[in-house]
Length: 284
Image (cartoon, rainbow, N blue to C red; front, side, top):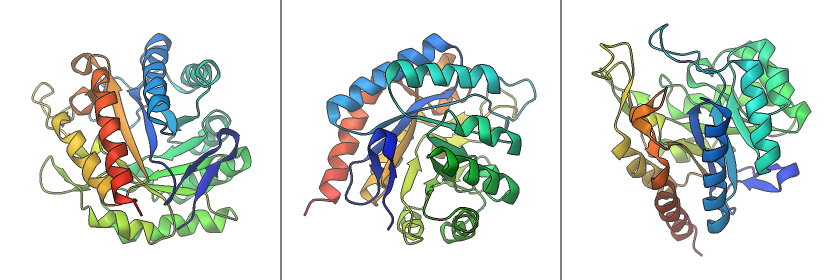
């Protein structure tokens, strides 16, 4: 399996390297909150000697309702992320939705994320791969809820054809299973790693209940945040090279996907557990 490295940050992901933590907010709400969450997570990861990438979205285009909060938008959002990057001295992960966003996003984000519902959009994947590689970053591609693990091969092949070398990290986030539910097949972690790429687990979105938040009359997504540690621990035990987690100081008041987010106070304990699981699995 390929080991990928963000050279500027001396951060590597793959077998034989520490568990990478991609964590932060679901969506940017304001700059002060982003700094608060980023600073706390940076401190925790530093204490645990875990590589940390701050994550937050500037726009959540895939919303159940047109009334749902989406974020501050491209220009304001990238400025917020650039501030976090500069003041906290951490790499950044954020997602994009349109081809013309690829260049601006790659100029700020070190991990540029392809959302799950867009992972087969060839023009978007190719444009993002080229912009990200040119900027010295990596792609973090979420496997669609409609794909089997081995079907991710076509995504990886597209990127390899568009850009020489290896640039792709695949992310598992569950598969649609019946009404308002997602299920994670832990055997898929190894199947995707067999494609020659590192794999992460998005334990936050894997506990979503799409359209099932009782407060939203089918217009908002529910979640089972108590399941996040369960899925994260299981995926790391199954060989995941990194974890993708979303936190909020007060998840029930978060502007987006609060039911799936963990309270920020839970971060230290969970990351300590995940490090221990990772080390146990990879012990000689």
